[in-house]
Amino acid sequence: MLAEELGQAADRGKLSGFLEEIARPRAGGIGGEMLSSHTFNVVLAMTGETKQRVTMPLNPTPTFKSLQARLHACEPPLLGNLVQGTTPLKQDHVFSGLAPGGETEISFIKGNYIQVHEAGLYNGIYEQWTTNEGRPAFKMITPDNPKSFVKTGERHIYYSSVGQQIVPGWKCNNRYMPQMSEWDMLAPGGPRGMHIETDDVPEGKFDLYNGGTGVKSNAPKITRALSFRTPAEKERASFQAAEEEQENIDSTECGGCFNGEARVLMADGTYKLARDVQVGDQLQSASGGSTSVEACVREAKSQQQLIQIGDLLITPHHPVVHDGRWVFPHQVPGSRYVDADMELCNFITSNREAIHVEGLVATSIGTYCEGLHDLEQNPEHRVWGTDLIVFIYQQHPQWPNITSSTVDTVAAVTAAMDGARDQLWRCQNAVPAIVRKGQQINAVVVAARSQA
Image (cartoon, rainbow, N blue to C red; front, side, top):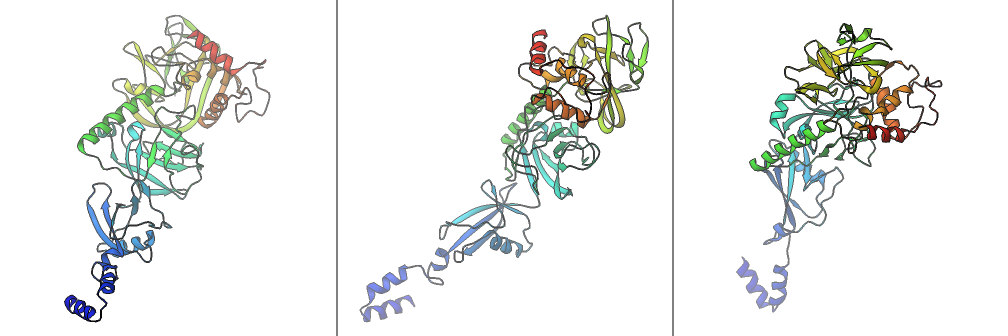
């Protein structure tokens, strides 16, 4: 056929023009179909396995919707998210600048997935499993550190703004509790520079808080592009997650409370239930002397997760002494996580001394923990391990017998860390019981550092 056309063209004296014509790509001609189209190699994001090769004409220009339609028409259909490089593709995406006859790799993610980096035991891959307040809720399906996952259980990321004492924002938690004021870590503002009112969990590096009192050492970085790792890379990721988690533990705030039924050792060697201790009572201090109760602080009844050690129920970040050093309760042998719905107690004591509770030495409010607190580097420790937290409580209208919700305490501490000098408590509708006489929070911090 080609020889006949070539001969006829030569007879007409148009050989050169004909050669130019057949060299030009033509739809349906030799090489024309290939050179006027582009191939999309669609691979499974988790493994790199090719799921489908789709060749599409360059005119009209391929779009996300046209590629998606071709994938939906496959047998079986490919339903999920598409990612080019590290960028999730949106509905209005246009594939401009495609090379004729070239190939582009597109990652396919079945379902709605995210990956968390740089956040310790929260590192891993999450899949959406439900929704809350019109936003997806994610559950971890592949942890970076499987050992930690087995020890601590599930991991969830969800948004909530409605419920019992809720602080609006994205929550990181080992349980799905959207209507409760319980979270392990809170990201009230989402990623830096981004407003929280988004329909889906935003990508980016989050500003993450523990109890709202300061930025955690290792906050999540969330991406929609899922990384495929070799066995060696998985091992490194597991090690990194463990390191980041330990740094987060070391940097958490060191305040806390315990159950009202816990027995507190008095200065005379007798015991009182924590709920029955009163201002002015003399407690036996960890140093062997006595310390006076200056204020009783109650955390309002709420559903939360506590650590149980014998008959003691204590908040997870309330330091106790074990083997001669300050540790967190979960580090005490025999401790376990339990769910509880109760009021909790703690005290402000003279000289902020530690006390004896159910046979353990535990901090009172403002106790400095040698070897655990870092007043220079950690803003949370400068609150809970110094007189700054005492100063904050002194401004509560109910001083010295205070009942406060977790949300109100978070708001007061956050306001103080932002530089507020008074009116720290949201319930503060009257002149505080303590006249502040020009006290400055910075002065309290400086004094606390010098004492430490």
